[in-house]
Image (tube, rainbow, N blue to C red):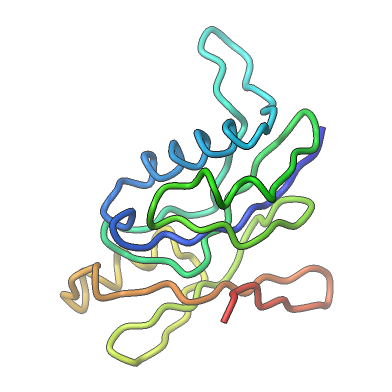
Amino acid sequence: MSKLTLFFTKEYPQSFLSYREYLRHIIYALRRAGAEFSFSEGFHPRPQIYSVASLSLGVESRIEPVSVELRAPFDDEVLPRVLPVGIHYLGKIDGYIESYLALYRYNNTYFLLSHPKEGLGKFIKEKNIPPYEIIKEDIITASGSMLYYLGVK
């Protein structure tokens, strides 16, 4: 079994899908690319796919990490050809990303959120900003004493 974090974009028109629908498109594409998922146990097994934080509806992302558990390695070179418009494959790393800082842009102003799941929705409400005007530009994560900027510029 291999645990991977895959990186994708979420751009228009996919930015207006719910995060659950976005992940469903990624699952479909991974299946088309030949990925063999590990499944949850129980009466309704689901592919083992995780995301640290979901984006608000309408927010675009230049880099969106999605963690998966696969039974066997797969050829990720096929993945870009089977993704729908608005989702692009950027690459992968071994292991899961458990937490990260997210760098967002709004009106040429950048801001970091340490808890993207809670912080972005709160920021949007406080500032009364339309979500479709915010773009997630980059993510920053740490491993040991190293700091990694994972976005693709």
